Image 1 (cartoon, rainbow, N blue to C red):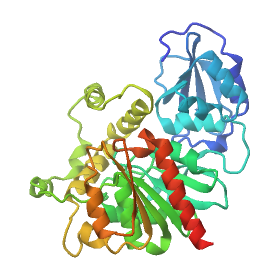
Image 2 (image 1 turned 45 degrees about the vertical axis):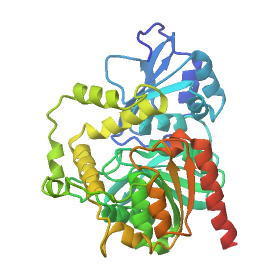
Image 3 (image 1 turned 90 degrees about the vertical axis):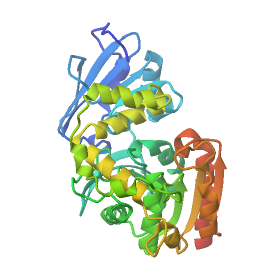
Length: 400
């Protein structure tokens, strides 16, 4: 981000963005927010949002912003002149974003000036479990698609998926409860059956009877659980490197069963230390999508409720029972909705060797192997979305 403030007067492009600000396209959880806009080599200004009043633009001060967006003067001019310029610039690497992507991308969505059906919108729905944060786009009469992020991830990891599917489907990506900007109950179990209930509650709140489910990592496990328990609510399932029950010995299982995830409420390490450790172990943690994704993870993890949710969910992934009447692999064979699995050849978290086990349980399932890691929709978006769209169109053809 720009280090020094060099100009008193903001570029006209920033003022034009505020002129077309539409509060219905952005969700501001606390009612107030500060979004810092940096023009490389020129200066920094803060958009101050306060309730439903029109936001103001003021010189950046010492207050910590909720989100930061930076681009050069030409890119900001392009964004001001093109309603789709913000996300286009982000995809091309011309725009940097840090902090809350819920607010950062939400601001870009709120300043497009677009009133067309299916525009990008950030919001939240009230469910029986609490509020669930959403981002949505697409045709109103298109088949609904619900996207579920992985452990510690947020809906931001599905921004490219929302864009890729919006022309033909109604696409909604959510923050699973416990993560991002969704509710974070302290004593919730945060296991696959519980998450499946929250998915159904979200579909109910969105007034969706049946939907395609797309899940990455833990979100893939939740998508499969939802389809197993509620096949009448699920059209098709896509697992992007889905977390599946371990087949090897889980030597730490007895000990983990004794550990209470609520201990995560305590944080012995200072914020700066946690930040440094996380960024040191994640490759590319200071650049592009990866840096923004790490910001999203830390934004939740550095809160007591977010830590408790993270540890509980991680614990349950490890303890997921593989065999027996209630075991994952035993039950998977009964999956009714058609399923597509996308595997990363470089995935070290869910090795591609699991593909063979899934095929044995679900011989009719479809599989795609990509030269990527654990987050195919971010690492290989074009190939991933091409396979997903082909799979979803097959469902439309069958229905016709």
